Length: 232
Image (cartoon, rainbow, N blue to C red; front, side, top):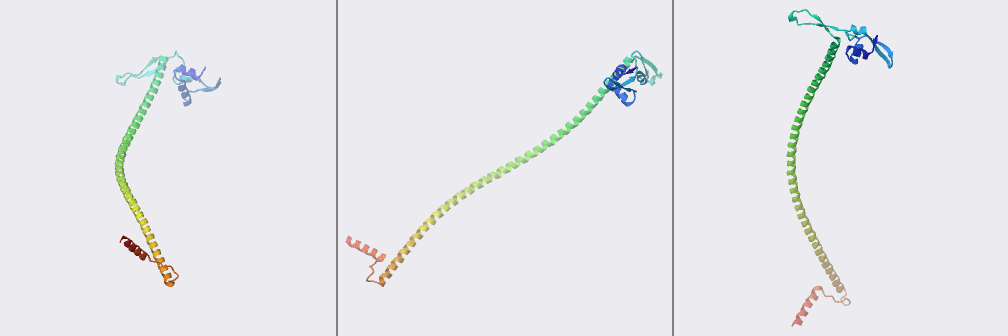
C-alpha cells in the first residue's frame, strides 16, 4: 500500500516538511504519481521500515540502551513502544529547534549589544565635538561683539567729523558768496571811474559845446561847503 506524505508523517510522528526533506536528500524512497492536484509523492511502508521507523502503530521499536562502561555491564536491548519513541523524537526535534532559536537570539543580542556600544562611543565623541565647537563659538561671539562695539564708536567719531566738516563747508560757502559781492562792488567803482575819465576827455576836446561836468569829488566838496554856509 502506498502512502501520501501526510499519511507517512502521521504514521512515523514527523512533520510533512521532515518527510519531504528525507525524500529530497535520498534517505527515503518515494514514487511520483498523478493525483487529484497533479504530481505527488507516494511512499511504501517497507521504505519507512528500512529507515528504522515503525509503519505500524502497534509494532514496538527496538532501541539499544548502553549503560555506563564503569559498571562493566554489557548493553542490552530495551523494548520501547513506538508511540512513546516517536513522541520523544518529536520533542527532541522541537528542543533542537528551540535551542537553535535561543542561540540565534543570543547571537542577535550580542550583535545588538556591540552596535549599542558602538553608538554610545559615537555619541560620546559627538558630544565632545559639540562642546569644543560651542566653546569656540562663544569665543568668536565675544570677539565679534568687541569689534562691533569698536566699530560703533568709530562710526560715531566719523559722524562727528562729518558734521564738523559740513559746518566748515557752509562757512566757506558764505565767505565765498560775500567775496563775490565785494568783487561786484569793486567792478562797479572801476566802471564809474572809467566813465568820468571819458567825460573829462570829451570836455577837454570841446570845452564850449560840452556840458560842464564836475567830478565826483568836486560836487561832494561843494555840497559840504554849501551846507556849512547855511549853518552860519
